[in-house]
Every structure is written in structure tokens, then in C-alpha cells.
Length: 467
Image (cartoon, rainbow, N blue to C red; front, side, top):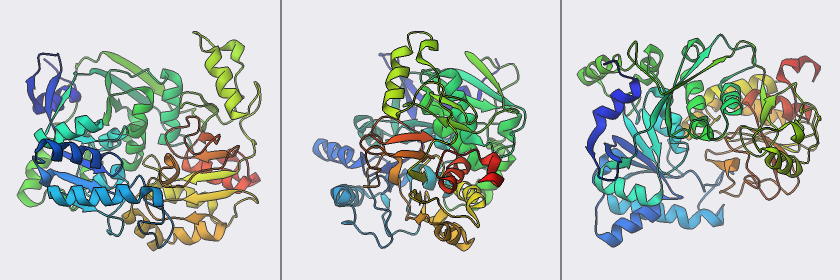
């Protein structure tokens, strides 16, 4: 019987069924971060259980690390205890730690693929909801809670209810200044924040095939924002070339063997999916959220919706979002004044994201009164950007250029807006108060964020010449 790619990966990692209907899935590698892993380490310590495969486990300092140059543990005092606990737990369990001074430190979802820790057809677990970012390489990744993490560390298996399969086909070609972030936001807008709940989502089609590997990771990163259990793209020759030579990727005869297997990782002709969705990207314009969840999104030329037109009992949610965001029905999204711009996070902080933003910023300057920040997703990305002179472009334009970390994504390191600010952010969530008390967050692509920083208002990057 023809199989989906999900079925192939799942079945290859199936250890045993459980009486409660869940299945035990073997986890190939996992990457931890300091916000949740120390609690899991403590649980294991109290239970007298060791980490089963420390050689397949990696620790990152990313959520609470300060981004200021010259940072140390005390630059963000509220994160110091997490950093110390991560060091001690990793040391006690023999786990490789990427500390704040490590040349490869960064956001777990950025570092894991760039070092080749995650490979096509592999399973991956992270105590973070955006684990499926690495699905851009053809891996099957799952977020987990602290108690789940302790179980995974002790057993190398994860208990999961088998998801259903969804295929999302992205057809056509992407217009200029429209990227994976815009595609993902449009999908969430179309399907809703629970549209993929209970599904593992495979992204396919001409538009996906034309995307860079970094763009595919952005697409998979946002899969969780429409409720997906995991999201991935079938690996192809672009993925294999991208992985070749990375530190944790196989080499020599093992590479040849792996490559032969990876080339089988595709859904069979005639494989059946439980649900399919098609989006033609050819006429897509840059997307910007107007509300307080990622599904409340519109094209840059659109106007804020009227609650009276909301369907399916959504009127109260629309009214609440408009009140929090300080918007009125019929207002244009374009030209809304902004106070702060943030370019970074596991969604959009890779080198290609920074290159796209720098191309907009070059030779221009941040508008008066706007605070603009760029935080690379890893120290490796930061080095590469600086070697290419991107940091100078941003600094000359008036941007803050930070050390790598999660930064303003959830504000866990002290990088937050102030009450009442309107912020354009390349992150993945625009929930109330997420980036600071009463901060109003609009999600957008790096290009749109960069153009908005220069204009001092939500800007259509396609009209760059008029800025």
C-alpha cells in the first residue's frame, strides 16, 4: 500500500503500542534549552534515573541569555539561575552544552540544523513548541513538556497519539518581496489557529521546491501556530547539499549510505492523506497581522475587518483584538505608525533573513523615534553576517546589533517593549503582552519589518522607492 512520508518515518521509529492508545516512538536526537531542561534534570536526579543517551542530547542557552555585547550571566539577572542550572544539569549528565561563550551558541532550532544535528528522516524532540522548525530538512520533530522531557531523557522514547496526515500544496511562484513568512501567515489565516490540530503536515508543491532550506524552516516553524503536531518538507538534493560537511552530519561511507536512504524519503504516488489544502502563491502580497493571534492577518494593502462581519461566533474575539491593538474597523494596515521593530527569533534570524532585511536597509536610516533591533539566531549566523558586512549596514542605519538568542520573541531575556508601543516583529506569536505589557505586536517578514523601520510606519516593501 502506498505510504505517506510521515508514515514511513513514524513506522521506522515505532517501538511499541501502549494500552492507552498512544505509541512509543524512538527519538534520534534532542536539543534542550535552559528554560525547561533544568526542571527535567531535577526530576531525573530525584528519581535516580540517568540520561539514557547523553551522546544524542545537546543543551543550548538561548531563551534567557542577554543580547547586549559583552554579556555575561548577570547582564540579565532574571536569567542567571537558569543558566547556572543548565550548566550543572548538563555537566552532571554528561551532555554537550553550548554556553553563552561557545562559538556555536544560539537558538536551539537554529543551531541544531546548521550543525547537522538533525537529519532527514530522523525524529527530534525539543521542550519548545516550535520544534518542527527542523522539518525543513525532512525530519519529524515534536515539542514536549517538562515531564515528557524527563521521560524522553531517561528512555529515548516519546509516547504520542499517532497524528493524522495533511498535505498542503503550495503552487505557483512567489512574487517579489514575498517569502515563506508571508506564505505561512496566509495559511494560518486561511486555516485558523486550530486548522491543523491533530495532524502532521507535509508541505509540497512548486513553491516549496523553489524555497531555500532556511525558508522551508520558516514555513515549518509556523506550523504549530495553526495547531499542527509536526510539519515537514520531503528532503531533496538541495537539502543534501546544504547538509554536506556540517559538523554532526555523517561522513565518508556513512554519508553515502545515509544519502541512499534519504533519497527514498518521499510520499509514494497514490498515498492517501486525511486532508489536503492548496494555496496558489502567485498573487500573494506581503502579510501583516492586525490582531492578537497569527490567524488575524491580512495582506498589506487590506483594511482592518469589521467585527459585525465575523463568522462562526468570532465577533467577540475580533472586538477584543481590535481593542487591545488600538485599531478601528476599516483602518488601513499600511501607514500605521510604529515604535519598535524586531528582526530575529527562530522564525526569521538566519543568514538569508538578515541578508533580505539588509538589502532593504542599505543606504537608509531608521525613522526618528523608532527603536530597531537585529538579533542573529546563532553565533555562527552572527559571524557570517559580520563577515559579509551586514552588521555595518544595520548599525549605520541605526539598528541595534545583538548577540544571538531568543530576545524579544517572548521577552524572557529582558528585551521587551514598553506599554502602548506598536511593534513590527519577525517572530511567530503576537499574543497579548507577549513582547511586553500592553505591547501591540504585528507579525511580518524581515523585508516588511526592515521597510517599516525605515518608514516609521507599517510599510509595503514593494513601494520601497517611495519611502
